[in-house]
Length: 53
Image 1 (cartoon, rainbow, N blue to C red):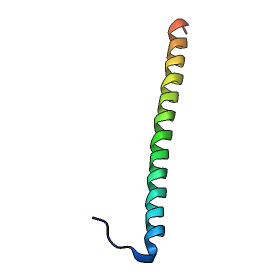
Image 2 (image 1 turned 60 degrees about the vertical axis):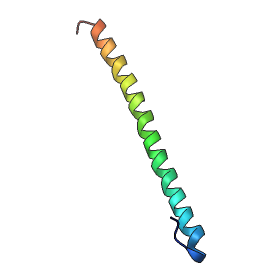
Image 3 (image 1 turned 90 degrees about the vertical axis):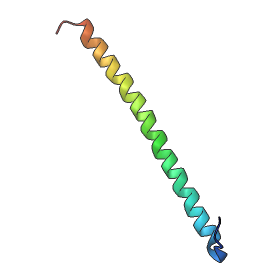
């Protein structure tokens, strides 16, 4: 159920849209960085496994 926002409808809906976009961007960035970090960790572990030091 959508409340009547009157003359503030654009501002309120725009704020909701901007917030949803920012949250989605932060989640995407977090997932991307997580995958990148896992790859880097796997590379370091692989290098340590091949050298006996």
